[in-house]
Image (cartoon, rainbow, N blue to C red; front, side, top):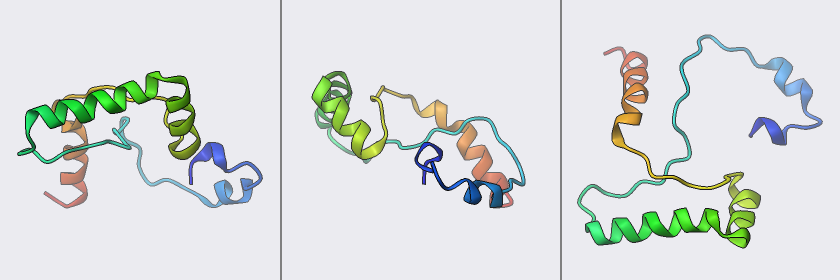
Length: 91
């Protein structure tokens, strides 16, 4: 449950505690198979990016997913996530 949707549930937040903090981690990613046809990858990418730029499309993704748009990312941005996962798995 997202924090901004927890209005009236302050008791739940008071029960939470953290054991460690990390830098920001990417979340809510949209991924495709590495062997997908590059033309299809581009079409999917373009569709999601344009959805967030269209007023009606943006309203839909905000209402359903609490997303405010999409942007292209690079695999290197997930290196930190991989490092955290390795630590959690004891590697």
